[in-house]
Image (cartoon, rainbow, N blue to C red; front, side, top):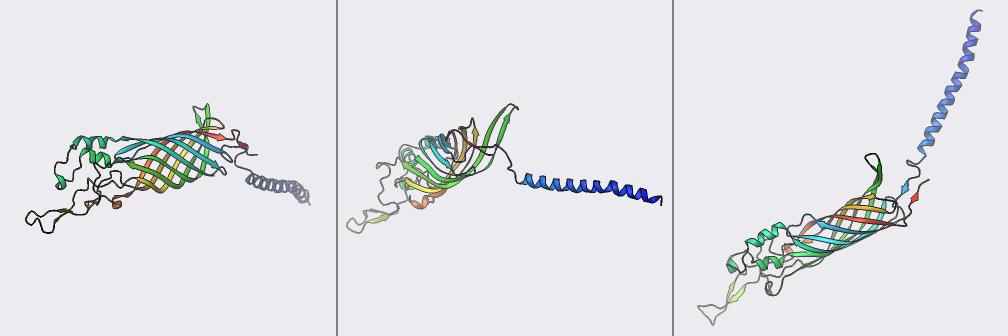
Length: 294
């Protein structure tokens, strides 16, 4: 009989503790479910979504063998969302000789030393066959998967994002091959010479082993693949520093000379090549006031 009060007291105390534990468990599940439905960042600035981006830019190629291209141009892009955008770029450029070209020119003679027996070009033949890229550009689609905020010394904070692009590349190529250098009308065809032993007989055919006087087949328009990537560093809500790496992949023969050693210059001397550029620009976004998430 003495045990009954003790059992009764234990049941009275255990009942609310169990109920409280159940209530806490329910509240924990409700809180977890509620948090899972919330956005990752509240009141986040949508710095690109629904905005038009206009970027005056400069870029220079870094992997040229014979001529560097220094270009200025414009990039225009519309951001369909904070991750997906479409755009286009166009550049006008001027060319500078690389160190390799200058060293080669220093070794070449002004006149042909050996005719068809020497494959070495003259200075004019080498220099006029080289091509440059006065115009180039691309149309592309961009993906911006990463964004965030940078801190400098714990005081200055700037927003940034990384983007990647792919699309169609375009380039206009030109050379200076004039009629005084590129005067072979039928590259690779044998030349007819009178037979000294029989002047009245059929001519002697001499193989054309000199490709240095062939027209340079490395001008005109080229199309190919465009790949790029870069970073926006936002200086404020409507202005950003744009740093990019761009690759224009298309067929080219920068030297304009016989590269496959078949004694003539033709389309077969062209190869698929990467034209890698580093660029910098200043992006202006319209409208100037960005949206903000709830």
